[in-house]
Length: 248
Image (cartoon, rainbow, N blue to C red; front, top):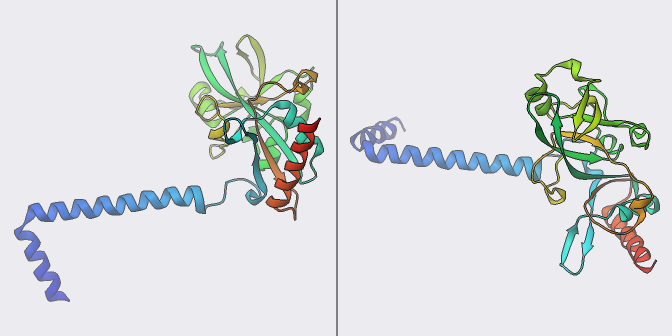
């Protein structure tokens, strides 16, 4: 083997151009293979970074006319799904919003996700500073509350812990900063996103009688299966609920 290695080194030394090409080709091949494995590992092999990820499922409408099985959801349907199902321990809703942040440096358009208060509990996510959105925040009389992403907290507020309790101006509406999420927290569903990018902050979603009118579709929904309930059982029940709503 020593003789073979010596002979190979001598041969490569006589052809530096070929040697360089071979080394670069091997390096690119190994690098590409590593990158591909990293993507597969992150997307397919590694569990989602949430509590009990095997119980998490997305709920979509089926747009028959457009042949789209993952269509955004009407708030009225979301509320009925939430009330009528027996398969999920919780169903959370979320949708994109956009606010212009003023009063703290230059005006900044901030990609925001409005969420029901149970979303963070379903994901098993806690704030790094302060708290997440709660059911109390969803009441009509409660002020608007926002939870900052680590990126927005760092870039806009210099990672200042005193930001908790601070009042910000969001498109002319006063909002209270109640929390900052950890750096490793991310919740982004591309199919349900309209602005095409992850949220920089989260605020509470609110529903009233007007949302019972079946018009407009702009939400996405996340369900947490009850222990022992399979995805097939949940799917069958949701089809039954959908048929009942169609009849009604």
